[in-house]
Image (cartoon, rainbow, N blue to C red; front, side, top):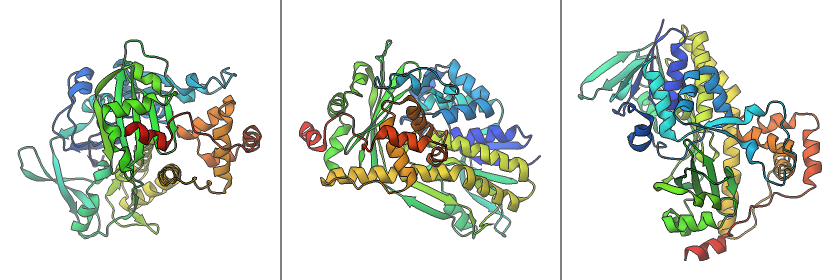
Length: 466
């Protein structure tokens, strides 16, 4: 049995700890926020303070791949979510009216997920973990312990009483999210900073929750317009959310954070407007400065450090409007647990295998997500500058996704194929490899380009806000 310390007691840190605990290891989770999960889900939703989790009050969504991972690895968490009001949601129920064939297909259950607000996800995970893992809250980790030979052997910490201490470990797992201070800690023990690539594409988010005892029929999804997007998602207990996504460089759209302007724009988009029939909950929240970033602790096949692994957003983080963050984090937690199960006794082999599995199973999804982000940022920039967007890159995968985007408006199988990529069930290149799918998509698309849903153009929006 090995002693493993997980830094960060949010969703992915606790999920990783729970998966590894099942292997019989002694696992301790260190969480900086002092407040434990409240006694009830209602208290968690209404008043739980988690200042260390920047996304805590933002819109959250668990795509179906994430639901599958919970059911497989953490069924107690799935059960708790359902018991506390997590909503069952399947995108196939919201096919557009233009798709007339609504007959079921084998495997349609793979599109089902559980919808909930972030505090409810955190509550369900934390209450399950508190009965199975040693979770220490109010602990401030200040640095790493090292053997002097690029191997981490534990952590330095300060508890709620501001007492300094050390905690030895056979393995430290960084699950501290986007703001992880790991690079600085590694530099302090003489380790070269991990390789990092980062790109801030300048998205800004304005969101709000809504609720009604009898919600109107709504269509969930991410809807792109010329210089803005509208993300509408179901959640727990009859709640829904609407989030506007614009460019932080587009100063003229900053008034959208005001309630009246937020409602004006959502109400002017027919496919999104029904959400305004519901009762708003709380204030509009805003977020910006969220980069696509990835760190790598293995360089050229050799680890720059051993005894420490990164998981979830501490490894790589992406634009939250695509709703993939929690699920990619759960995928990475499962990969981390697999590597630990096979190689905990050999620090070098563990680091190399963790990197290999991450590169093989998780990195393609990170790259696919950042590619979508870049394309969307380019479209928004073109709209701001008043010029036509550049054509998508001329490659078979891009052409396939363009054709599927057109064909899904009338064909149920293309609709399913599109959501396989959105929900992390299949990469676009996986679809390209399916015999006949690209040809069928091209035939149905008929050379037509995707069109925007009805809604204000940029000049019309500026006039609305003036």
